[in-house]
Amino acid sequence: MKSIFKILMCVVCGVGVLSCEIDNYDSPDAQFYGTIIDENTNEPIQQDLIEGSRIDIVELGYQNPNTRQIRFHSDGTFKEANLFTGQYEVQALRGNFMLVEKDTIDINGDTEYNILTQPYLRIENTEISFDSIKGIVTALFNIEQVSGNPIEYVSLMADLNSNVSNTMRAAMVKQDINAIVSSDQLFRLQMSTENLVSGKDYFFRIGALISGISQAKHNYSVPVKLNIDNSHVVPDIAIPGNVIDDCESLDGWQSGGFELSLDTDKKEGEYSLKATGTGVVIIQKIFSEPFNTGVSKENGYLAFNMYVENTAVFGDSDNQFELTSSGGPDVHEISWKFKDMNLFNGWNKVELSLAGATDLDLSAVNFIRFYHTGITGPITVKFDNIRFYEK
View 1 (cartoon, one colour):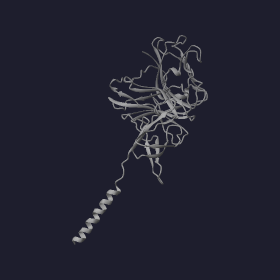
View 2 (cartoon, rainbow, N blue to C red):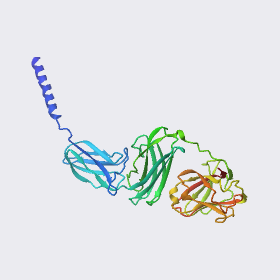
View 3 (cartoon, rainbow, N blue to C red):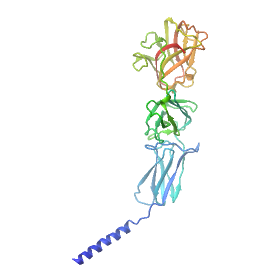
View 4 (cartoon, rainbow, N blue to C red):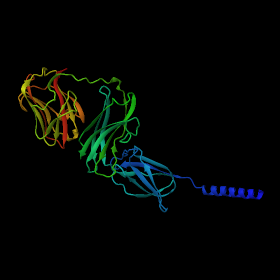
């Protein structure tokens, strides 16, 4: 028995020694880090942390080597600390940037590797601000297209996490584009903060997605931190006023080429007036009986609710909303240019001063026209509760 015990002990010790020898590998001794950089601006290309771009890295010198994937951080940086000194093949893939070719590099110790390319598009001249009285965050920006593909949509996202993105957000508003845009076109997105937690710091970020490129990821602006305090928000109570048209009927309304209908998506009553089409937009109404607005030129306002599906298709033309007392356009008229009305996607509360109505007879208004020749694509607009009041 003693002999058997001694043999077993020897076997166990032998296995232990052998095990120590097998596990006695060198520890990783290198790290690989860097930034993906816009070669034109020398700024990091902002990324999506969760489902964004990645780097594939393969250690050379082995049969059937494994591919390791490194995710970019949201600021465009990356880091992998558990590597061994050696030669590697690297390539940035599945990104929001132009094709990056494979590269072979030596990784030894702390190895910095920056990737120079161009994003599919650049979000520029960003201004993101919070109106604490209206409880609205507004984002203004331009887009420079690098890729020739149309932009599918733009969006404004908000989250408590600084890595806010299309896949990490508490709130988002979105505007479909589906077009190639010019760099001087001003985009405007607005987000109500009524569903955000008052008193908290939120991070806001603009995103845009290119179309027609497989696995393309969003391009982003740099996140902006804003404190959202809704304690000072003043409810926007509509002034009833003297209603010239409640948009509950199509009677008297005409359109050149656009389809008119009543829509249950409304702001007052049961319906709104809806117009859908493309090309030159003429939506007008001639009133059989002149309407007395009951307001003065000095203090009077024309107000209505207006829904716009996509303000981007308006372009920069000077077309307008017109009001006359001549029964037709251009005579005894006051007009307002759409580009000066600060319209955004969705429902807008429009309020227009009558102070410039020098030739208009406010006691006998009988013609309204929405006129626009610069439409660049199909559009849907809606009107509701057209009225006059004084302030």
